[in-house]
Image (cartoon, rainbow, N blue to C red; front, side, top):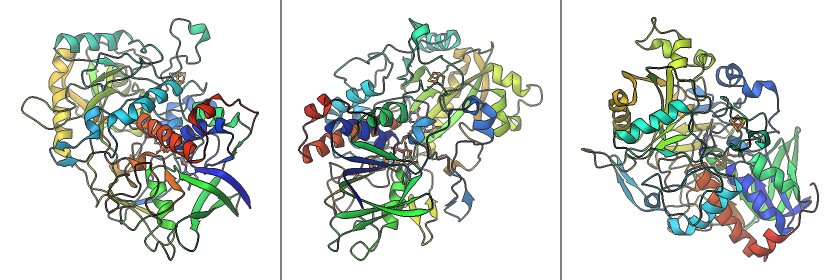
Length: 531
Ligand SMILES: Cc1cc2nc3c(=O)[nH]c(=O)nc-3n(C[C@H](O)[C@H](O)[C@H](O)COP(=O)(O)OP(=O)(O)OC[C@H]3O[C@@H](n4cnc5c(N)ncnc54)[C@H](O)[C@@H]3O)c2cc1C
Ligand code: SF4
């Protein structure tokens, strides 16, 4: 049986980042990824393939709380969900790490403060080549370094939106973007600034995803091995139940077993919970590391709404995701609770609407789909989803996943929508028209929108209420760690990936120390070849 120093299961924002961080240490690292490399093909940028035919969405079937089957919006590839993500790479707000009182209850504190994660946010922004501008967003937490790259410029219609928002007294800012764009020397730029970014794979590998900037750099080190199409199905423990002894993997129709001193799970929130629950044994009868009965609970995924407003003039913007607004993050006049974040989402294209339902709006029939798309300005509204123990992932004996979920914070979500709608006349947009669109996929079951899933194995100091300790090590096992979004005790209202990446770097430093490999030594070690 092959033996390693570290096995990392999953290669997305959490696992891919950790692999890159640990690779220079020289330790023997095995990466297990259930998916394959995402194929580079013209379909990558075809809206109908991606949005209507769900070409890159897994064929998994999950069940909702009523037992109704649905296809979750989940992506099994090297790089995980980041292959398709919008690469809006936000830090949580400093306040998100403390207790925040919301309309529907409490958003709990993290076991670490913002200041502890701050250096890792800075490191993650460098690793993922984030473009942004500090000092524009009043809710922005303190940062120890500028963004490594200048903000991505607004195209004229979005610049006008920014100007109109500022004139109305708001504080629009340049959104932090992980696209490898060199606007001053476009002939050297990897990114070509196209309209098929948010929700699409990047055909030219210019998106700062965990494949391109996590796994591939890690594989330049000969001590790192990647197995694709390798699905971890069970973690075995020793007879005392305190150490993982084997990772059981299905690959090419065979069962294989691997062993390592340290095992790190980063399968994404639902699949990490699934793996732990399926790994129940005599010592862990309710699932591995689950004496607290917290594994799978506190599932969160953001109360998000994608809407389009209709600009009076046409909106010819190509890359729209350059603006954000956090004026209502912590509340608004007459509503003392947090509302959330407003940002742009990828520009509507008429082909996408075949997977959506704008014709059901009162605009039809006088507005054709094509005309709607030409005038659309597309927003993404996110309100914090609160962790509730009853919102949970469970698995039956056959490994079928049930996602039991009831919405939280619906009032705050509606207030955020109403707030934006009330602003439209000042923004040169048709008043009254703020049309819901299904971003990213054809599916009218909200629970299937699992893009921002988090919170099923939270870390904390109270063993009765958490699965992991503050180093993200399972309370009950000596050598089991988790580094994906499942560790989040709360999710805030900004996109989760950068926080998963930063936390992965933080846990990575702990692992390096535990393995007796200093972080400086790891950073200085030369790449030894292709693994
Ligand atoms: C369309 C879309 C747009 C998004 N836009 C943004 C955005 O703009 N900004 C942002 O911050 N976030 C965005 N997100 C969310 C972001 O991508 C996720 O929060 C992030 O990738 C989560 O990281 P993770 O490590 O938890 O999981 P993932 O990135 O999903 O990685 C999990 C990995 O584990 C693998 N895996 C699962 N089970 C197993 C198993 N049993 N064995 C082996 N491997 C396994 C999966 O194949 C996958 O590669 C978006 C997501 C989507 C889908
Ligand atoms: S905008 Fe840039 S990063 Fe995004 S898909 Fe196009 S080329 Fe790739």
